[in-house]
Amino acid sequence: MKPLLRVLAGEPCWPPPIWLMRQAGRYLPEYRSLRAQARDFIEFCMTPDLAVEATLQPLRRYDFDAAILFSDILILPWALGRNVSFVDGEGPALEALQGADAIGGLDMVAMPERVAPVLEAVRRIRAALDTRTTLIGFAGAPFTVACYLIEGGSSSDFAATRRMAHAEPELFARLIDRLVAATITYLAAQIEAGAEAVMLFDSWAGILPPYLFRQHVVGATAQIVSSLKARFPTVPVVGFPRLAGLSIGAYAAATGVAAVGLDTAADPLLATSLLPERVAAQGNLDPTALVAGGTALEREARAILEALRGRPHVFNLGHGVMPATPPEHVAALVELVRAA
Ligand code: 1CP
Image 1 (cartoon, protein in one colour):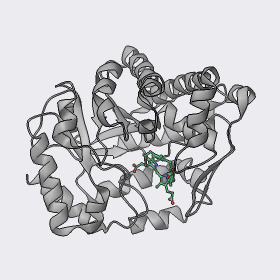
Image 2 (cartoon, rainbow, N blue to C red):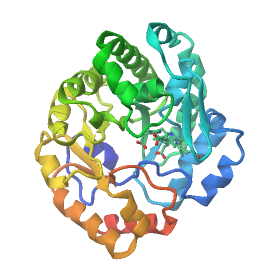
Image 3 (cartoon, rainbow, N blue to C red):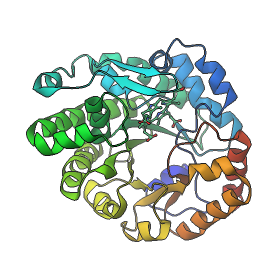
């Protein structure tokens, strides 16, 4: 079995497999020149030639255990008919969702056809990979996608989303339900096209109080995992409930994910003491240690390796690679982990 899939099946592996969130992207000069070939970021993601190439670029430089489909969590809302654009240097801009009508306006019927180019990219990436490298598909988790839909873009606190979850609980729950259904369809299609594992990015999971976290993060994730497991029993789901703190234990136990992504703030030993033994931990080097490089990078990477040795662990960052990261620091990190 491929090393990453072995660990996601609950088996410890030494040294641990490694890949990095946002391993493709602006820190690579070849990505920047590829990106210049598309008019905008949506077109970039929806052109299979470009998405395949962006996915494979980091694998030509580094000995990673996984390729992650090059796309974005906001492609699903785009495919559901929302207006989504990416303003260079400013992040995403969406037509903000308002009220019950807008929820009805999520176009579930058109979605499968609109994501066809993504699935074509998945098929081609899978065909291009060697026998050791695992292809990871992904989607945003419903709560995090709802954050961007309601806010109309990024936010420092997603206050409108949190207000709606408290003040209009039925409407909010209906929105989450629709996103659960869309996410299941989307991830199932990625698996059928060749994804061997899928990841749910719940970047803003930790901004909810516990009872709403249980409903909109744990509940939504559990529905996605059980539906995918029923259809694809051997395909692992990785969850990344960022900023969830002490709630990761309940998250791991109640959702049935194969692995939990630890964010940068999680103490690896404390965090994994909350996880069931066979649930893998993924993470969690500080992305800024990778920018810094040198002894800081070595010290932090070794501390994580030691803390998680003997349990199922996938080495990764606590959040995505930053654009300021020197590519040679990534090479040094991969060497350090391989030589552990
Ligand atoms: O080229 C560019 O300038 C666009 C920058 C960019 C890139 C490279 C965006 C816009 N998205 C991506 C790719 C991307 N996004 C991947 C590719 C696969 C890989 O990991 O190599 C993935 C998995 C994502 C996931 C994603 N997008 C998340 C979840 C992870 C996280 O970072 O928390 C989120 C929140 C987004 C939204 C998004 N898309 C892009 C930006 C700048 C953002 C963040 C907006 C914000 O700060 O709120």
